[in-house]
Length: 230
Image 1 (cartoon, rainbow, N blue to C red):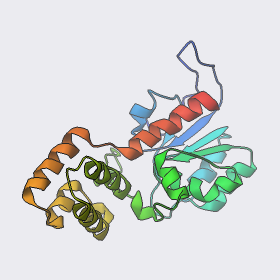
Image 2 (spheres, rainbow, N blue to C red):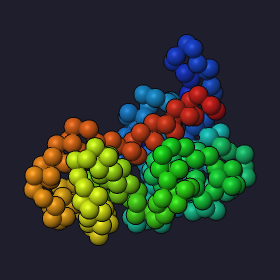
Image 3 (cartoon, one colour):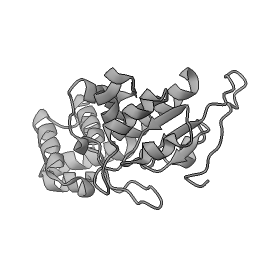
């Protein structure tokens, strides 16, 4: 499916309402459009950047969902263009990554925030775009680094299960924060952290078998919210 192909929606589940709303979704590394389209029929576009909302408004959408966005490849989506969409009566929903950040900043103006990452931003547990930033292949949208927010969630889970100590947890978080986001991977964090080798092996197994992709879960929640509530 081409990323810019418009598919006007209807729900396949007989228990759900049929909709003719035009829905534009900006997504990529958090949830690939091919997977997203299995949940919600929409016009899927690559991660949002400056000016992309204004372009989308020309197609007269009813709903715009922001999941992924660019941070440094080109200017990020501006608050002003989201506010313009809201002023024009478009429902704007955000979560998972850039969408969560912008929703936490603009929910007082009507943008809808969904998911765990949005709640982290809203509650002040995370603050910077670096917490959700990743590098990805622009052609395939494959994620090539790991988000700090996801790492923190999984390291905390390992701590709660007593696989690592509180000191180990702090060291891992500090190490992850010290690594520039395009190079931030579990392999590099574990290698640079200097934690005990036996704990490192246990943690590697835990991450391989039981890690949670926080941003992906939130991306799915955004689509499910639109599907069920709008």
